[in-house]
Image 1 (cartoon, rainbow, N blue to C red):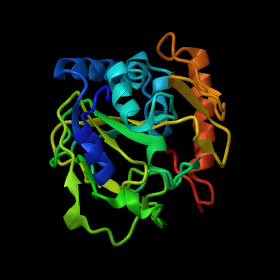
Image 2: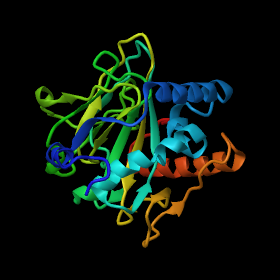
Image 3: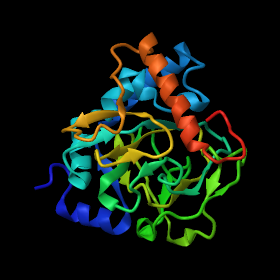
Length: 280
């Protein structure tokens, strides 16, 4: 019996490769997290820009609580089972009137995680901390694209592309895209193989999204470089990853050091084989 999702929602996810919108937090709770996050940005301005937006949950308690939220984990369990690891997180922040966009891509392409040919071993979650809509650049998904396997990507290194390598899938049928409009506190789930992207923020406020990329079963393993994960539910009989600790305090020195080491490992993974690197 599912814990969070209905059987119809699970069927929809299996068909489309994504599910949205789903309720997790109230708008007031989401606003409080935004306030905590922006207070951290003001206090540690160099820690949450560029690559610093990767794995900030390892250093900020407000983000750590999201990763371990029981209702969110219930939804994930309905899709991948009771033994769950959290691989990492990314803050996707688009400033107002910023040209930054996310090209059509698949999460699994450069992450070095295997297997990629099994559908129910991983899932990405995306939580809105502000409204996420067509004006400010919400995510768009291509339904059913998760059934096409891992596709070829071209590294563009476009200055306005938020992705590390500006990786892009060419020839996407954009007419079939579905926009995932979310209120603050709502989230979406998508397969690591689902093709998705987002447009620039043309609004007057920041668009802040927090993604867990990804939740995965202990079957998953890293093929490029050793890296960290957190066991957030159940058991891990395989031990493919070094366990990352939860933060006892915001920006505690030992947590900062662990995140810096993990992000350095991510850099080796995400830019493996690339002709150049950027600071994110």
